[in-house]
Image 1 (cartoon, rainbow, N blue to C red):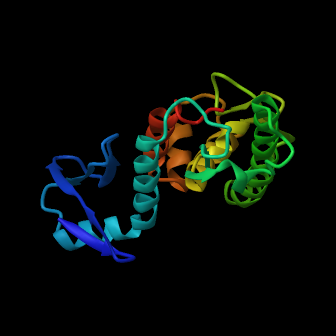
Image 2 (image 1 turned 90 degrees about the horizontal axis):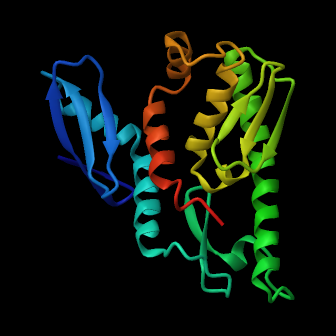
Length: 218
């Protein structure tokens, strides 16, 4: 099956089963699978894919770009770097003139991600804290090798600066995840139910982070 969105075709195959929920998955090769309860009408499936069509196209673009970008970062002007889920030439993200050393360019790019992440996360917190009716004490952008975000017992949130490389909806997921920890500190059923009430496809966001973590680096 397929739909057409923005003059682009989105092909997907359907797996029917005894489950009660409909979900959309894209594997690392770009294959899109819709899992649906037995008896689900084709029209419903196509409407669902269309609803998430723009996200699917953005993910597909990022996936295609990632397949052509090497793991070794090129700071000589021809290299491309992730920002909000898409690849951009270095010169479109930072001022490269007058900085001819790789370490200097890398430092400027890192500062760009820190600044951008702080601005974006701050804006998203304002949106979702109202929906969740919570208020963090503070938030901070940090460098971390193990976590995308965290919430402390004193209601302080931290977010990995590399999140600026992820699509906005994935950043939203991490923001929602940490805000919900203000209500439920553990990852229990209540926690995931609350996350799902704001972001039903949160598992898709987690898969994105798992798949692309190795490309979200300097």
